[in-house]
Image (cartoon, rainbow, N blue to C red; front, side, top):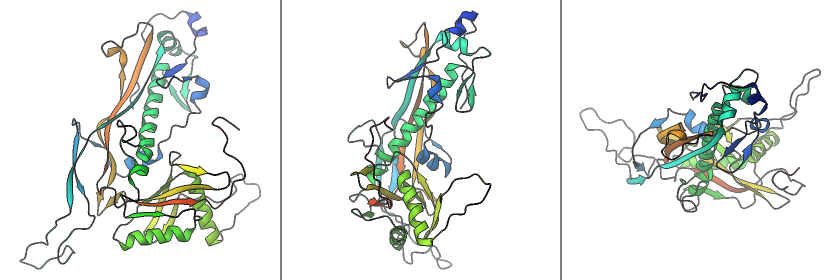
Length: 360
């Protein structure tokens, strides 16, 4: 993202440096001090994954209308693509419907006072998020708002619910249900094992649907690793004079469908009754026969806008900025091809109660 330098060019009195506070107030009413900015988790794993498997699609339309393929397999006799010389190709008549998908809007806004912008552009006033340095507070604020916007999109890709909040799009947890998916299986408290995962993959493959990745909460990700560790009897190598983590970790597993990456995201729901932790494992079908099935289609990519240029929003003593994005979440099989193993129990049994947010 390009960095916008909001420096005004005014003369700076040295006393201004002592007045530097660099506090950021965002739309959620939270004041974020500079020392805490670096600890904000700027991550959007599912959105990053979907954007990594293909180029961003940008269609600046007022709304989007998609032809949704409701069948992943084409019809025809024979069903293969070969045909006799001199004849016509086999008919390809996918079951489909025209579905109007209204774009959704995401973003965040915030402001900094002019004195902070001026002072922090001076030498000796470093402004950074993590290890990335910025020219001034305004540039840092834009980066933070951009990250907050992407995290908000990431969260709704997972658990957005347009029925509860019409401004959201429906996410994976909302749409991959027993009513919408042919590959939904409620395990009702069964302990997660490697065998259960392999069985679910083989079940989907038997119907002509091949999962391409596993989506889950980090707790379920850990349980997957532990389940495969128990099955393969993998031992832990400890070497003298070597610093490193103890234990086993994996970012992919071998399945009947091949090596599937595990994408874990904190926005996937989990629950605990004080004894067991339960969660769901999603068997994502991100593309089929070379066609992307699950991806964001943008009407406007995340874009930074100085609110001072918007009529009625200008402030004489502060600089206000916002990030806007307009997009649709596209799932071209009407969600039927996405798999879900619901209500599985992590292999470990916690002995602690769930603390309040911010607790120890």
